[in-house]
Length: 442
Image 1 (cartoon, one colour):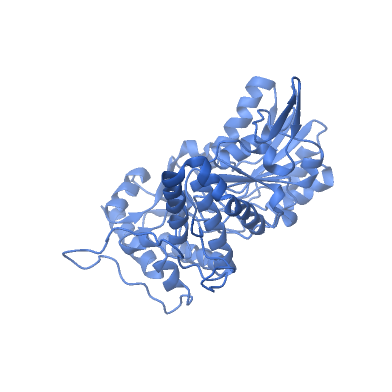
Image 2 (cartoon, rainbow, N blue to C red):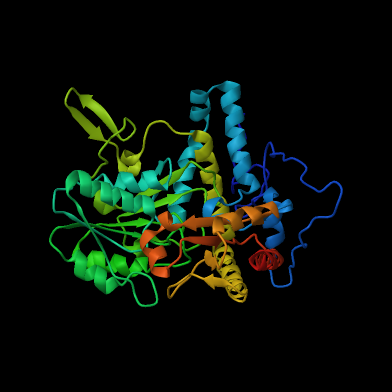
């Protein structure tokens, strides 16, 4: 029979829900130990680290020969996630795709429940989709916009979202208005209130954490404003889930879009959408319904699926759904201690980078997260990213197109992005800082 995707409290081996070690059919990995010379990286210092750090790193084979500081791009998957993916693919190869889907149905159902727990929602309010941008677009498409309608957003929104608004403007005459920032950075909720009070406002949309900055916007306060005004509220939580505590009730949002590949440590190519009961009760549905989201009941009639499933498409990569469920379970077991550690590591890294001559830290805002962005004078940050990668250090870079308004305000054309997670070590940060300092001098 098909083994469990990940350990559960009902596992026949008697392990509890906090035990994330692999169960049946453990995944195997290539031997990444150096063959002729010692590892260039220092061994992790556990002096100030949680007791779980050693286990987190054992679960993460990518830690063996690489410093991965690109968790805002795609985090290293832990072994239970890799195992879930490979096991389902093996079953598809062995018995067929549709048959493996049927066999996996209990675990698919559990994935919705795990995502709901992660978001503070019921399983029926969660849709699984291809990625966070699809989730966001499905939510936006549920509104019947008319010429002159307004979308209120921020100056730090994700570029794909801004492109969606601009496309709606060109096709349907929808106006995009951007709330002001606070002096220290991040959206000013008073400005949101003033703009959203306009009678033609149909939606307020916000990126909780932008892609090119460590800024954390006050999504909960904006949600309170939307409740007071009775305006639907959409949050892009792509960079937030996995590094920030998420409670859709406290956020007062009607939609929340997320992804598996970033701080949640799931696979690429899978995302999810939370949809509130308020929206569901209004009968909202996406513009392009799929036969998973509705039943074709008569020649000119259809019946919507119950719950958020109406925002899904029929064709699923079920191996990715398996991995997403395993990632959600892993994140729930790691808990707040992991999230807090990631932010402490980022704060330490931010301070260290600021001390390098020629390096300017670009992060703003009252609250900052586990994303650190810098400009290195006299250097192209995309080139620095590649040179660090040659040294076994993964980072990311952003150019002006990643955030036109924010980058122009900071007067930068490129930025180098570091994004540590709870499985990183202080020694890894020190190594990365020393490498960048050397490159900055060259």
